[in-house]
Image (cartoon, rainbow, N blue to C red):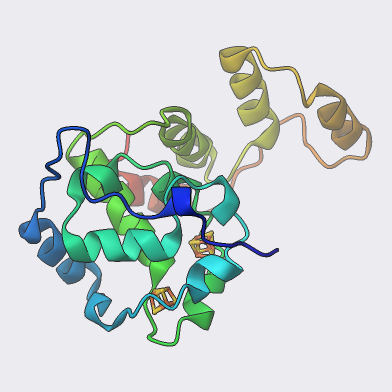
Length: 195
Ligand code: SF4
Ligand code: SF4
């Protein structure tokens, strides 16, 4: 996939009022959270070029790094990009400065949740929570249950045909499986205070 930086994808420093709050504490907090060497980023654009989902992001990965450097907290934490990153790690393997962008995206997601900052995309954060729930109960994912729950919640039946094909090919179990170490998994949830 190729991606070219367009005029419309450039970083906007000023908002409609002409003043964009810059929060240097935010920059430092993010850097400290993951020991990120963000100052090394020289905007080579390699991370965005290789990112398989960059075309769906409102702010591209290289821009996220730059905006964190600039302390543009609100713009970064309300972006869709931090939720669209699928942690494939293509960018971090190619970054000449070893900047761990997926870990940075996770840090930004955690910050947004902790500070109760809601972004443009409300569906993906909720899906993350729904995705973790079966693991808390069964110790592993219960795909069919998750799919049925999502379909009923969103009333989006677009992938119904695909779901039926998967069931017919035994790719989806009707009943949830369980794992031996369920107690340990529940302890992880308790320690991380996940509901
Ligand atoms: S690849 Fe690394 S150095 Fe280049 S823009 Fe992305 S984060 Fe910055
Ligand atoms: S880890 Fe995230 S930002 Fe990096 S290439 Fe993959 S999807 Fe894109």
